[in-house]
Length: 183
Length: 182
Image (cartoon, rainbow over all chains, first blue to last red; front, side, top):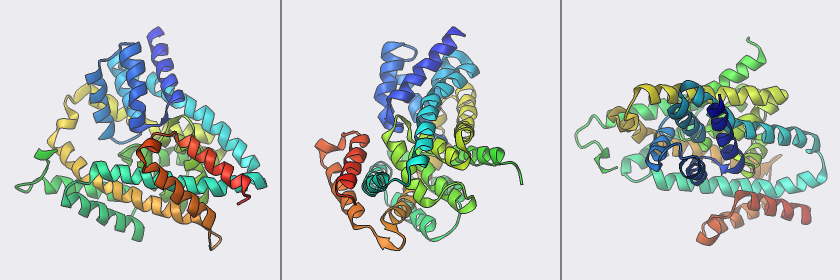
């Protein structure tokens, strides 16, 4: 039980002190798990991370579950994940409830005109960074642009698009000269 | 029709199961929800993204919690975030237990080869939608927001500024909005 609580608090700190999630969390994870607690070595952390990125769900949560499982089995995974989600729950719920009450104030409306601009800029930047990582061969560009068009122009649910893309990837690699020996 | 908590939990369970690529990958799914449920609108979504980027915690988890609160208050946030992480916990536990070398598996690699660029395209479409709801309000193009967007975007391309915390950009943009009564 003591170690489960240690897992909970370690991931509570990580969740409460890092912003953005995904790759931006790596330095904090490394500090808490590799350097401070010495629960895993750096190679294992990077392996967790690689798995976290190619499985569904939030990368930080996937990493928490993986590390927790390695330490303390199924309950370790569950406690780590609960630790990771607690700060988000408390902070976001508070802000969401406060914001609902202040939405009509003129000051909030003025601020939102600015904030909407900032959201656009940051999200555009996120897309460009994703593109830099995922677009290298012609076929990846075709998939990206094709899926962009389908998502933009049709009402096909996102789930169907993701499954179709997985299928295209699998079929594509059945062909001789398929790709990924270069990755 | 099932009860609201169950529906909410199940919708976020599905997002947790199919959003591959972390936080930004949940955005298109959150947009899908505006078409199928009246929990929040597309313009609420802009605020949700802003708050989620500017506060601690993984982006996807923050957005899910916010969406849940919009849908059904405090408990909604809890239901949505638990729903979101259940697939992760199950899948990762199974992989950790049974699948050594999961990400070296050729089928997984092939599927990811297709999924990664596709998800980039799908997120790009969602972000374009986000631009439209953020910059076109009641049929009018909001010039000040667009100018702020361009200025921040250009700054982000400069190496020195790229590492600045998102919170700073939101605070600066909000301050500009308040000072100039935009």
